[in-house]
Length: 227
Image (tube, rainbow, N blue to C red; front, side):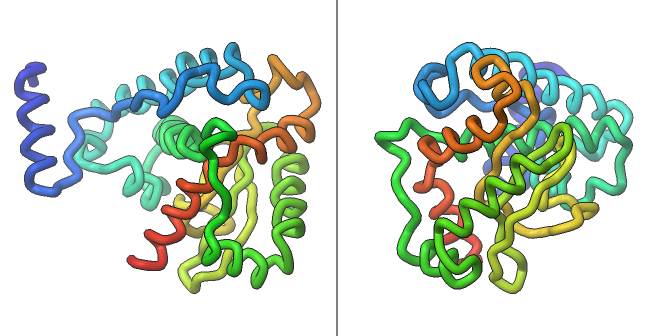
């Protein structure tokens, strides 16, 4: 397919409301690479976004020749049926989704907002207090052996749950031990923090709270409630 045909197909899919992708795209960061200083340093952001995330996208697109139907699956829908595919699709498809999700979990502290009254009420109901929730989330992040992620998700019954996943797995995946709609995620692969924090994952996790984009988390929770 020519580049002109790709553009036309993408436009047609957008107009019809379909989820057709001729390939997966890495969207621009919603802020500058130095915007999260000092919590997350510029060098880490440049490498994490520009190299690690880009590699996941490139490798996932490389799998379309093996699984042509991927060209018609949104990245979210791919997670929900990831068990159908090989390890390369699972790792790179998860890596693309997780990182795209993660960038939106972050914002400069001045614009990060705070939990909505509705979300805060639910956090207090399900965890006892916001502080208890943070402790549980921090524990999930710091106790994950090796590489992985910590998550706040909402289950189908509306209950909030904290979990962690290995490698590039996530709660949307049909193979996840704890499934749900993710609201907040933290990357605890070493490449996400080692340049600044070395082996001090707990310090990185603590700093993360200063740049959580609560406005986006609130939006995701409201979307779940209205679905």
